[in-house]
Length: 520
Ligand SMILES: NC(=O)C1=CN([C@@H]2O[C@H](COP(=O)(O)OP(=O)(O)OC[C@H]3O[C@@H](n4cnc5c(N)ncnc54)[C@H](O)[C@@H]3O)[C@@H](O)[C@H]2O)[C@H](O)CC1
Ligand SMILES: [K+]
Image (tube, protein in one colour):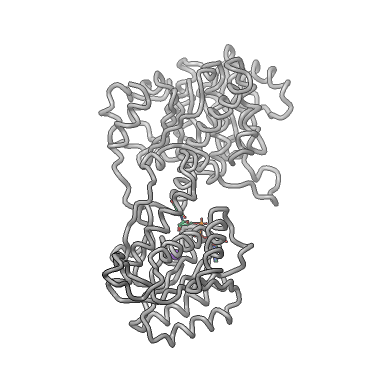
C-alpha cells in the first residue's frame, strides 16, 4: 500500500474536526491558495453567504437600514463583498407593479452605511483593497451606499449616537475583526465594541458578526465560514461552507511555512536555535554531517557528537562544531556525557549513520529514556529507529520519528496491516517518507506532495532530519515535521527544474534558504 492510499484510509480514522483554531484556519486558507483557489474566490463566497443571511433576516424582521463596521483585514474584506451583494438585492423602485413582471426582491428602501475603521491606504490585503475599491465605484453613483473612513473614536461615536436615534429597524454588521485578532483589542475597535454592546439593548437593532464576534462584542448572530471557531457561541452561529475542499486541511503547503515562528530581528546568538546531532560510526561518518549542514542553514549553532572518523571529516566544515567520543560506535558508556551535552541544545537529532549493533542499541534505549525524563525534543531517524525496544517505549510528544516504509515496520507498524495504526496511541509525530510523505500523530494527519525521483540520492533522509530538527527548536513537532518534508522536497523540485534529476544532497541543502525565503 502506498502512502497516498494509507493517507485516505487513515483520514477516515481521524474523523472530521468540528472546530478549527485561528492558526489552523489561516494555514488552511493559505493552502487553499496552494491548491489553486484564489483568496478572492473564498472572500467572494464568504461575503455572498453573509448577504444571503442578512437578506433573510431583513425579510423576516422587516429591517431596512444597515450599518457595516469594517476592519482593515480580510474580515473587513468579507464585509465589503457582503455589502456589494446586498446592494445587488436593492432595486430602484419602492413598489414593483405586478404587471412589470419583476420578481419581488426584498428591496432595501434606504441606505447602507459603511464605516471603515481606518484609512483606505491602511487596508492590509490585496483582496480586501480590491473589494473596497469596487464599493467606492458603486458608492460614487448609488447614493444609498454611504462610505465613511474613520479612525477617530469621537467621529465614530457620533455615527453610533445617530444609530441610537433611528426609529427604523437597523442591522449592524460586525466585519471588524475575525480570526486575525492578536492580543487585547486596540482603539478605535475597543470604543466601537463598547458602544455597540450598549446599543444592542434596544430591540430595533440587531448585530450580525462576520466569521467571529470582534473580541468583547455581544451580538445576535454570527455567520462563520468552513468550520466552527472555538470562541463562537454555537447557539447563535450559522455555519456556511465557502468552497474549501477537505484536503485543504490535510495537505502540506506554503500555508504551513507561513505559520512557522519568525526570526526575531533583535535576537542574539543562539536564540534562533541550537541543534545537537548524535550519530555516525566508524563506517558511516558522513551522515551526521549532512544532517548538521541542513540544520545550519536554519539555526544559529549546530554541533555533531560522533566518532573520530566523523570529527576528521568535520574539519572541512568550519560552520559546524564537533564533540568527539571514544571508540568507533556509541555505547552505554557514552550515555551520561551525551545527556549532559544535550542540555545545552534545544533539539537532538539522533541516529544518522549510528550503525546497528548491540552497543548502539544499548546507547539509544538508555539515552532516549533520559531524553524522555528531560522532556527534550528529539528527532529519531534511521539506525536509531531500528534499535529501539518498542515493547515498553514511551512515544512522547517531544519525539519526531522519520522512518521510511521499511523502518516503519521496525516500529511494529506495517503499512500493509494498518489495523495496528488505527487509533494511533502515541503523542509522537511520525514523518513517514515516500513519494508522498505522511506526517501524523494522534491528533493530526497531513500529506506532503513535494519531492521527486531525484530525491532517492543518498543523504536526503539526513537532510530531512536536519531541517526538521532545526525547525523543531522554535516550533511544535507536527508543524516541524510537515514543513521539513515540504522544504526538503521543494528544494529537490527546484533542482529538478534547474538540473533535471542530476543533483545531490549538497545541492538540496544549499536550496533550503531559497525555499524558506520564498514561503517562510
Ligand atoms: N479562513 C477562510 O477560509 C477565510 C477567511 N476570511 C476572512 O478573513 C478573516 C481573517 O482575516 P485576517 O486578515 O487574517 O484577520 P482579521 O481581518 O480578522 O484581522 C486582521 C486585522 O486586524 C488588526 N488587528 C489584529 N489584532 C488586533 C487587535 N487586537 N486590535 C485591533 N486590531 C487588530 C490587524 O492589524 C489587521 O488589520 C476571517 O475571520 C474571515 O472573516 C476570508 O475572507 C474568507 C475565507
Ligand atoms: K467580525
